[in-house]
Image 1 (cartoon, rainbow, N blue to C red):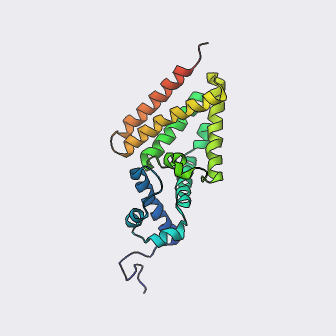
Image 2: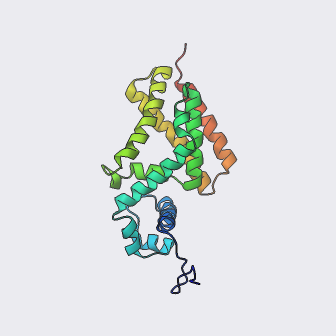
Image 3: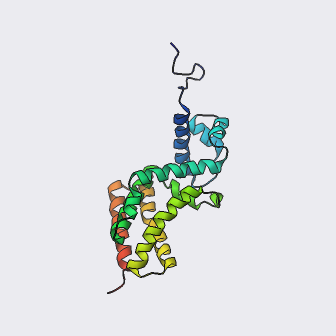
Length: 203
């Protein structure tokens, strides 16, 4: 009976899908630690225990790799209910629900999505389908902010962008072990609420 483990090197024979996921797992950890793109391929190959040639076989360039990471993180957020959270009727409940989901995402995986979306290396290289997901959710929240807080469209986008840093930074601190999940979640909830309260116009 043929062994499931390769005779040379003792590496298990894995399906292409599993091997691809292993490369992405290693890339997420490396990206969170490195803090920017592109990633050092030697480090990625070492962390994933594969050759650089195999990384190129799955991801012909680092833009493809970064978009695969972003797709993975967006899929996790959507599976957790981000679209439904953004679609809630009231701004406060929608913002709090989205912030809680984003906090959990960053606490678990690190600020992967943020790095990929904001890094100059990816300027003009974000997969249009992924950009459309980001923009659809942002528009839903911005529309609520514009109406509820009586802000201009640009002000609503700016306010939401600033508030996004709250769950992002709290999640990052949890991810690095500098904050407990419970405290990070509590701070996120309180600071989002305080921010929205400060922007609410007097009746």
